[in-house]
Length: 383
Image (tube, rainbow, N blue to C red; front, top):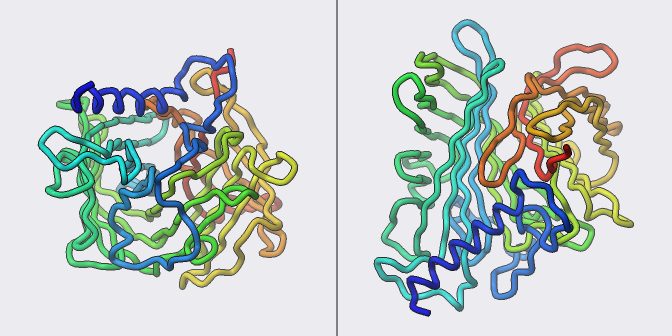
């Protein structure tokens, strides 16, 4: 088999992993966890707490690890005070361990890139997806990331931070479609708080067995700019949250998906919490939370105390999706009701999932306490 046929086979292998989460019901359980993230990863670098995060280097790619992403969500309002939600994500997937990489040449690849654009307001939810390929070594091509100055791109979708080594200022530009069907955004983002490391020295375990990722965030982004929707350009302002993760085996083979919350509370605090279905003690769920004050100081972090309970299930894309949740964190005095602004936030991408903006209320008083984003993966077709 020549090298070009082998590269094509590897791309097909990647798509096969991704489409393991297709809209068709499965007849047998996956042996690699959700989206292949529990697959064995011999030969790749393994995430651990042994090496501290280093900036600006860690803003850039880590091609010796199997998977990685740069993930932005934003809660915005237009000039009429109407809420909008958006996400922009760039994913990197290595096709082979470092020792098996081909030498750089015009048609050799060892990395595949995928990007998602999402934009929501009211009943409208729009999504777009792009793919690209590259080699681990420069020169940069159709997609890639550089650490300093920071620049992440795929085609003309572009997130960059001119001259900043700490994720302090960004511009983001991404559009899809033409004419009246064109949608997207052009934004300026400014941090008014520090980077936050999740877990032990920036290593965030996802199972009791120890699988996990290097994980940090910039959750203190102020945003202004413009959004194009239904052929109309709207001025917008709001708040954003940028996540950075990389790993080689994020999950175990038994973990079927997650429910992931990133919340901006009105008092300036930020709360990240998730439930991984599987991976906990005695085969139960694995939960984690990180509560930060307005200055980025950790107020509570870990697996103890957090309770996540679905309150309302709605039918979305032939699936039963929990669109209202209760999140309790007794040691912090928090009992929150988290509700999707609209159930129609399904991302019909190669790896399908639910991703949308949410409101946050006090469960007892129903007082509005904030906004945020919710991502839910691994919910299968149930006809």
